[in-house]
Length: 244
Image (cartoon, rainbow, N blue to C red; front, side, top):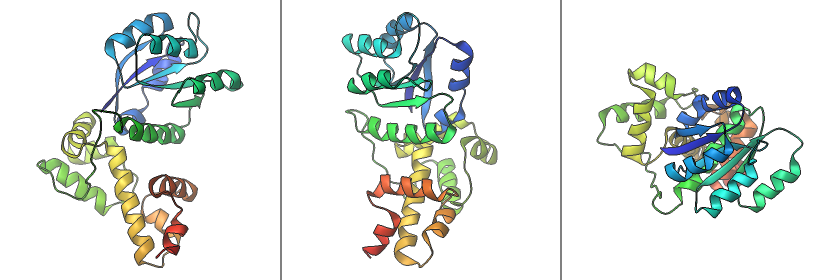
């Protein structure tokens, strides 16, 4: 699980963003928050989260200024700026300082999930976070084995932590810990990986269309499937099939 800290001077906006179940599904837990960017600096230094999500326009220190102050104090985590449209120059400054990403309010769920998955890949490459993924092996957890067998046999369905928790009579947080402890990955990354593995096999061994394979692997959005596939294999589904 990766630890996240949230900063926004609007409490209602902050609460709404932090409460998104996508964070937990993608393996992120809330380690703290602040509505005051100046106070947030000391909290972040003390807590040392993996990622800071911050508004751009705030009194005291804006998002870029806060990021600069944290880096000056030695913080080495990642940053994601969340702000409104029309602040392009500020976002350019942010990226020049090695910010990870920039989200526009209101943040769409699919956009947030895409960003968190990419962020997980970057965080996993940091020293001390390197994770090995082996989605096909059995684990020492009978509960997790049952979950992974179910997921593998039902790839075309939409899966969420809440739905799995209800089906297997477990807590969502507990399922997250199972994936982290026994497979060194997150639920969201795991389901993406086994879907991509299945897509690769179907492309190589069947004549099904890419759109059919997209549906079978749980991606009703064909264009999103192709984007995830390219991010995973560095080629399009059609390019992979043409090499066979």
